[in-house]
Structure formats: C-alpha cells, structure tokens
Length: 178
Image (cartoon, rainbow, N blue to C red; front, side, top):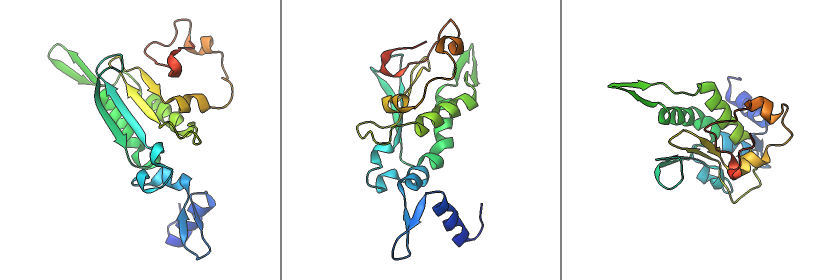
C-alpha cells in the first residue's frame, strides 16, 4: 500500500472506492462506504446494508437471546463479527470443565460470512444481510445473499455434501437442497 496521503487517495480512487468531484474534493463511493464506514447509517441508501447477528435460544426463531447490529462497514467490522460468531459457538461444558473451543473452523466461519456479504443483492432494498445463530449453531444467511449468488455449483450437491446431507445447516427458504 502507498504511504503518502496523495498516493493513498489515488490508490483508493483507482480501486473504485472514492472519486474526485469537479471542485477537486474527494467523494466516498458506495463501495468505499460499505467496506470502510465507521457508521453505515451516515451514508444515505446504505442503512439497509448493515449486517445483523441474531442468536436464538433454541433451534427455532421463537426467542432471540440477542440481536447485534453491526453499524460499521464490512472490512472494518469483519474480525469483530467472526469473533462474535465463534464466541457464540464455543460454550461446551464437560462435567465441571468449560471448553472454549468452537466446533467449527475459523476459516469456515470467515468464508461463510465473507461469501454472504460479497454475494448479497445490493439492489434488494427490502432485506439486510443477516447471520442467525441457533442453539444447534445452524446458520442462515439472508435470503438475498443466498439467492443472488450467480452461477451453478461446480460440484454436484450430493457429492459435495455426501449422502448424509448437511446437518445443522438451515438453508434459506426453508428447504435443504442436500
């Protein structure tokens, strides 16, 4: 990355995150805001892009334990989101011993969240990106994120999931294609 302020601004501009206006001032573009904003609500039109984490007390949506809105841009808040999800999945008691180890690899959680954020339909204004955590730690990513991912699967679904299916995963729309 560049070190001088002018070089940083040019780098951000060449990557479509900011642009110069006619008065030679810099404007933050939507991509720059959705990635790096301290508060997405400060940018008109991006309020609905705010990620939400919802943790439920059981395997249904009847009682939410906590809902955590993430007001920052995705790149700014990414590690905090991963830590929150891993923290919610590490409660395992064995006798009098409490283990703080997630049953899910950090890399897998990062990939799920990154894909949900990257593949969301930015034209859909009625939905917001969401990660739901259930007592069995099944996850559901917002409908728009799951439906807007373009292209067909590279591997047959049965082959990728195995013949036993994909236990603990809630697929958007209520159907599990595995």
